[in-house]
Image (cartoon, rainbow, N blue to C red; front, side, top):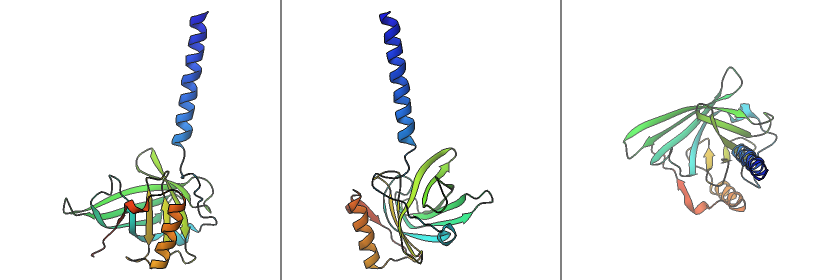
Length: 181
């Protein structure tokens, strides 16, 4: 009887742990962050230059970084990230796909560059002309400041940094991207 109760208890614990992991891995936006709504995906399409980012391994040692968004036939968004790896001395490109997590009028997406594995991509601030954007990943390790040009006005930059700090981001760790081309 003790062994049976122990087995039931362990099974319940394993199911609970699996459920907790599944729910936490589905999280696509940091706590407190809110995706832009209403969001116009048509206005967001096109080329964006990375002004600053929290560095991570896929963009390490990269400058001249940009992202270009276009629609796929299935309604998902094609993502083409480009940059120059100054350590390897070569241009690099990654092609992925983004899908809206819910309604396409909310800037809450998930993006994949590696098959079935998706990560959060959330536009949490954007100007009315869709020239400047603040993008959060699924947690406080991922953040991007984007612009349609290779620069961003100081006033916009400071407003986005303030918003990021209010959510708990350590903006002192941002990498400010050089655009030489």
